[in-house]
Image 1 (cartoon, one colour):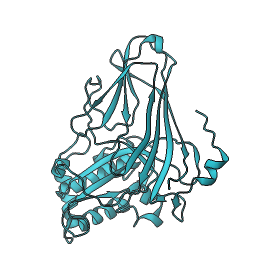
Image 2 (cartoon, rainbow, N blue to C red; image 1 turned 45 degrees about the vertical axis):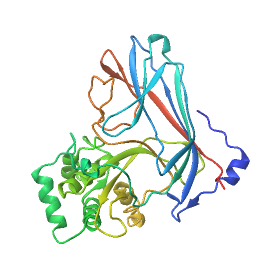
Image 3 (tube, rainbow, N blue to C red; image 1 turned 180 degrees about the vertical axis):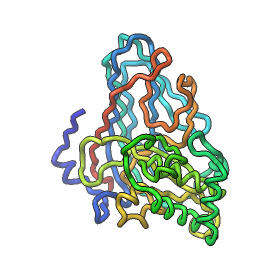
Image 4 (cartoon, rainbow, N blue to C red; image 1 turned 90 degrees about the vertical axis):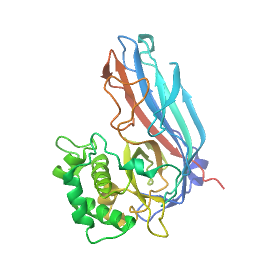
Length: 319
């Protein structure tokens, strides 16, 4: 989709940028269009797409779905992600599905949230609880007391232990054991390893995925997903009973922001879904989603690639 910005929009879009021009502090206001083109279909299929939901940090002025294919909305039971389910037929080959968001997003800091944090101590398929992670977490946190402080030394360990590198095999799956051994990977791998160590130290931790909205320009394409994590601190006055945001892969890419990314997620983001091993109904033949950025299309029980593009434009800051 070609995005055309008016001169007025360019002049009035004025979020608060950090000095390094990669993060937006305070509040950001933008439009994002997530567009998919269906491939040639030889039989009826099922298509799953995550739908971003509002929360205390992201609000929608618009959340519009344009589709020639019938759809319905569902939720996964464990994480309450909203998911769109489409039933395309061969007659829908080449047709486009478009989701348009207009978003006001706030910078995220430590925050309270309703729900049972302890459920985020459970193992996941690629984020296991095992003696190895328990031993690593125990060694790293042995001289540290308090959830926030222990979270910080685990954050520092992952930051020092890993290097951002998307070459070779095994990266990008969020496999905590692979990340620990390979010591390289992308955002999914950094945060899988961090979450595994937190849980081994009896600190609830969780995963989220979505988009980073570029801070150095006001419109254009977004190349793909980004993910991050939060852990639950229940011991100090400023974080008692609160989720603390972290982004270790961005801290590695921008060392000058390492202190910022412990305790903050910038405003130039859109969260699409939370959690791992996401089980939905109807269920894909491939099983629960490892993580869910989508789109996921199956025809005759086999996954079929879907072309997707992501475009944004920054909107005038609301008074």
